[in-house]
Length: 394
Image (cartoon, rainbow, N blue to C red; front, side, top):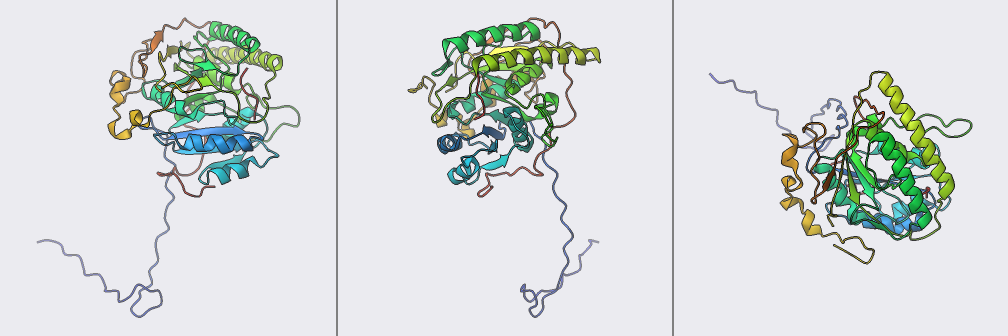
């Protein structure tokens, strides 16, 4: 005998208060938990753009980022208390941009605020002055999909370049690279370049200052300033993660003047390297394991030459309908395609990369955290319709 459900009462009209209308009480809807970032062949990409008095540049940069294909998941503009209405310019230029004001001061704090607000699987760090090329974003994502934990932009890797760097800054950068590589066993060619991308699930490991922490009465919290790029590079290396350098071409800023201070900023980077090595030693003394970073370089950029010396992005080459993750070596990273190879094995890279065997670091340690930084309660599945310069690199 089959069970028969009782017939539902007929409803003559759906108009509240109308004849035959039956008032019903809906159970309260539970908010959906915030989805955790995941690693897949089709990651949602959050682009974080710190800005301070870059209104004119944002009018050029934001549409260029929005035009990248495959489309990014979200663009987060973090304003450093600008006096030129940078947030207003961002919202007028791109109505669906997410714009917020940083909680303290400094480029590092702006980045931390953007990281905490990001809801994507991958986070891309992008300067607002127009020096970075949005057409290179797919190459960074391809490096991550191929198995890298951290995709490091480099102006000095084969295929990279710069229209803006001076001989003095190039020399200083080379010296800083040597110090960092000696301390952390890496093979960085461009330590101070700020165009990078990484998987969002690494945020707890980076251990950046909480954006909600009040600003100190004097000075800044460690990691809130220009040293942010060096801090990230050191902590990624100390944790023994897989790093892939991606060739990148730096262009001249579009409007305004640079805030670079060659000697001051270079000295700060040196202090940062020393402080981060001490931190790595302390973590190891508390039981952290010595971990050698795995380092690789993309041999050729995944994008064709244009007037800036970089290569023009071809949307057809990144059509999601024809995308095959195994073209990027995904089959060699185990069933989940990520990090399941033996430690020390060179990672495959998306365009015939050149593996670099890391040397053993003198000291290094890092401990992954259980979760990621807090952000919005839910990640939109589609681009929302109406959501509403810091110093550069030496």
